[in-house]
Image (tube, rainbow, N blue to C red; front, top):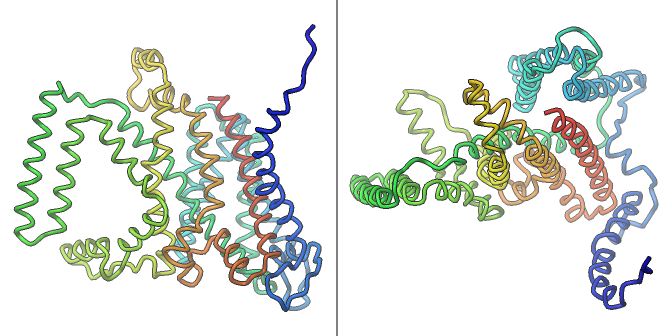
Length: 472
């Protein structure tokens, strides 16, 4: 047996810069931020350094009583919240594991979601509760429709019972709890709510990316290259004529839109699906500040084209409704950012990942499904979707991590966190605490709480995503 020899010193020399960079720019900042989270570290000269222990974390997630209220109220309230979270995890776990009663648990989740959405609509509550109730109802319905589930009561029913118990408990204890207590840091919970609200767009962006990938996956039967070139030339001529005529009539915006439409049609005829894939991916190249500035202009209530189009539509229909102020409205600011996020994500990297996944599906499986009489939905349900499970698993993990970390750029460029903190997320809150209030210790504590949330969400995604991938 040959003896193992150590690598020559030159190898260590090549690795040393990366190792030193990791220590200096990753490991040391992480250790320092962890230490800062237990102190009152501040950049204000008047603040003396002091080790606080767990006080930053207590101020962050704790509550304080207005009087001598019994602790039983907040214990029961947080127990109901824990039951709700455990129930949601239980329903997911039961469906992934195929426990008996999983369909019953899904039905309970759907009923709770519909009830929450209906009560929120009736009481004029925030849109986030309505949207969350709708997402819960959709997830519960999907659990009920899953073929592997069972309707007989069993262990899988426990998750649904916990969801109902937690939801009812929170409903009845909400008023009494917040009449007797207040959060020590109300802003943290409000901005956490904003973060989760914006994350509700993740299912829509993933579904849209999948639908778009399915749409542009196969080439269009456009004939030979010569006939495609002739058709593309005809589209360009029609576009030029339309542009000149409509521009001459004084409708400049409509003329530009018509010209862009004809150019897209010409590109599609000339290059087939390659052109459409490129067009859908183009927003990814300008993602960032430029994209946010563009959408801020689109959402401008006075000069933006979105409100101009809505006002024209309302006038043509004879409606007296007014277009929203979008980024200037507490009610519409978050939905406006969500729409922008979905538009950006649909044709981005997720679409390319799904296209790569679709290209790896064996045509033999699709042909076998067609021989068995499967239509479009049957082929998608039993062939395409199971084969895309690894891709969906990866996209879901990255989307959840990005959602919990995101929101800083949009808030900083488009709204500065307003109006009235409606678009401030946890990442932007950390920035404000650290670089405006100069309270680095408290900002580090928020960062570690956010890290714990991301870690827990990733673990759940990994556990259930891998199980679902294997079961499919």
